[in-house]
Image 1 (cartoon, rainbow, N blue to C red):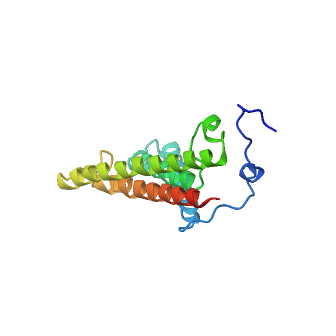
Image 2: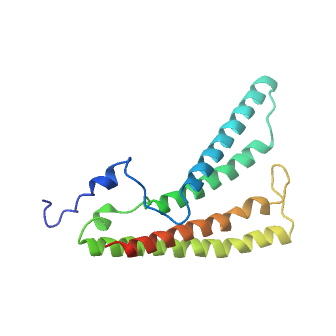
Length: 175
């Protein structure tokens, strides 16, 4: 039995990595496969650049630019998966203490704030994409249109916001 001021321990099923995941409307396999694909592309691009640089003392100019883009995509996709799985960063002393009603309320508040933040990021980044398109901005490394890269920020931000709303709804349905 925990002391009165001590946080309640997490249920065993939360700590068990083999526990079944919560059901979501959109399967979490999407983020999982995107993560695997992006990581494979990053490894392939980096390895090929190392080989070319080693054997020819030259390097592919596009690899750094494309790798940075893929790392940003990877961070956003992983953020979407962590929100959907309720694994985002939190101060567990506050989030896991108190009554189950308080814990659920804090979980819902956190999910709602994540949804608001990423909706705001999506709305504001649309302007960046529009400016890149309107002014014909090109990428510094290979000269492709910059909006090819920036279009993914609002798209993936909307995905994170929707995952957060899904978490908000699922936490509201908990007994």
